[in-house]
Image 1 (cartoon, helix red, strand yellow):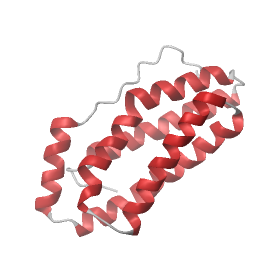
Image 2 (cartoon, rainbow, N blue to C red):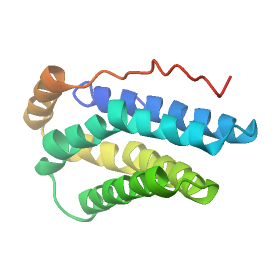
Image 3 (cartoon, rainbow, N blue to C red):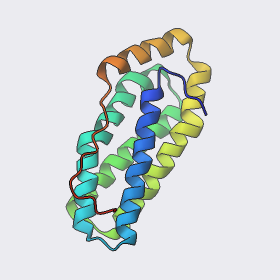
Length: 150
């Protein structure tokens, strides 16, 4: 699906989020130690995902209200909490829960929330969002040294 140019940055982040998930799954499949995977999840959060959530919450979500945005905000909270738990406790159960929740969240935003936004926000509002994202968008950093998924 072709994404509105003003929110395409966020869709590209989602693509990288799916690659992030794939790498974790590969690590699990290859029986990589969980501490290596936890370090990668932490790296990805600190260098990419945290900024993405903040951009959505600051530049996109304020233009809408209701159930659809509420669901996205709640999922952000759940993912943040899960990352904290992974960092403190680790464990395959939490990592697999993170994989599932992040996958569902990305699919929700791409398949439901973003099409709704494109349909219901005016071109002017989308342009405002796009202008803010162009100035502030965090560029994905994927220079993680431990390529355990290889």
